[in-house]
View 1 (cartoon, rainbow, N blue to C red):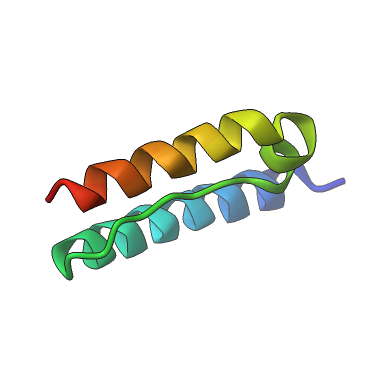
View 2: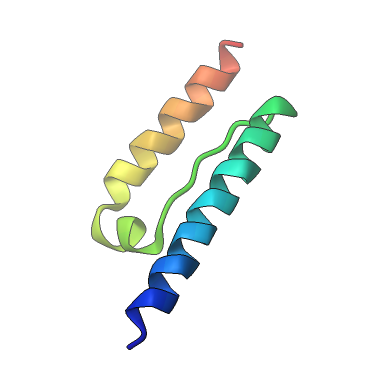
Amino acid sequence: SNKKYWDGKIKKNVERDLETDIYLVNQGIAVLRLWEHEIKNDINSCYKKLNKLINATKNN
């Protein structure tokens, strides 16, 4: 595979995700990003993260 290509692509994706998160938070939108492997490997942890976010937004 082309390591240079994938390293650059992943870096750009991470930067884009961060910019998107900042924009959404500035709009008053809570952001929770879950990766497919997290959901497949530990759904309970994902549920806890979601529940924590919901409870935090209820209190604001």
